[in-house]
Length: 405
Length: 211
Image (cartoon, rainbow over all chains, first blue to last red; front, top):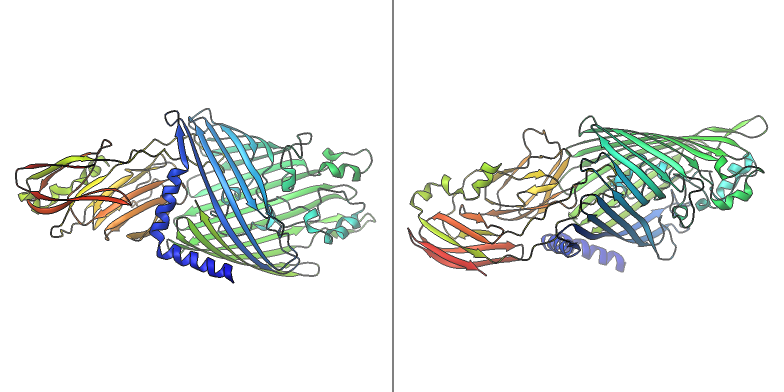
């Protein structure tokens, strides 16, 4: 109750004193930007404070890791952007929160991203980036942070946990499915959020085309604990890439692909004799499209993924979403997203076949209001239903207050 | 653009200016220059190298305290090299300001300032007619871009036709002013406006400094 009162007070204060609030943050921004060597070195510290509240049914949807139905998830994110001359760009993202994904765990501090980018030519035809950073696959990454994302959660394909586990191989086809109900966080989605794995990327723009390719230490489905080079080395790298075509500013089309082993080192002992981690890979093919004109923005991504599963064979899945955002007024926007994931069949080992996951659909509806250019409130309702199997459904209501500085 | 930017001193269009002969010149003490902004390129992995130039602080000197003269002039603030050009534009109440996009990328200009709330949405360089807004309430309007977080521009909407932007050294010259008793103001930033009462006499040049 106290929290709600404090939140209400903050919102009223933001609205009534909007101009002063804006002015304060603009001055703070100036203070947090420094320069040296005749402006050749510039650095800026910025960040967001997110206060998220969730109400959901158990089991918690997506990658939410909580056994309680009501979850409060505060997060402080700090960014450092630095530019040296025109050729060198460096950035970091660090977070203080209750876990990379919303959870009821204790507070933790992480350095989620750090990268050094070298841009030898000013026209951007070639960039080299080294570090720990978001994947180049698809078109969701550029809007995955709380301020840019019209929703509070990620599209289904980035957070729907499947029967794939990177920690242990199944002992049989039946075990592949049967073990899935045990502990959700032991399993993996097709793409785990923005996939801040470590590695190197090359990217650039050539006329209306752009390209980006990366070599990372972990697959797209890998969990946050696998993204650091201190946890997983480059013995079994994942290669990913995207080619984009922008006929004009309105449309943007992209084709992505990724290939790499998905098991963590501790899974080695659970693999069939004579096989190693490199024998079991995750293949992903993606198509994305986006449209933007005036107050309307549309995005869509389509992913076909294949996991090579020991003692089971190939497990295929197809996932997509269609997303729209519209600004009704300068400060009010609404967003709608339809997500679906379909699973293929795998052999049961006795000549039969079975679905390796329950097909499901999810609709997300969100509204957002920007009190100032530094303060935003989002409300979201999601309804998810399995369209095969027990047809379980799940309702999620979420609110997120973001202060950007 | 340059022709319109020179419109800052709009006296040429005013009937009252026929009788205007007085001049005020001087210098405004400007605050220390801010560091140039840093472009956040974290998730634009395909980016151009663009480094923003430093924009020195400027002030606006204007004459207040005489009968209102309503005009409907047009002015422009462009988006060029991921910055607002000019970064500070004084306009008279009623001015229509166009926002041409001179970059080869989208911009999405908006303002939540009480003096003018608007959002132009995403628009291309070739967008016609050029997106514009009429500024009909005096006050400070902060311009931002929803796509490029670092972009910030200011429009100072004034209820006077007599104003000028200082040079980077703070010097200004406001000429062809009507004779009489007025208040000369120097807007320095959102928190700081200095003012001095002045008596302008036809044919005379007054020297005023705002230290």
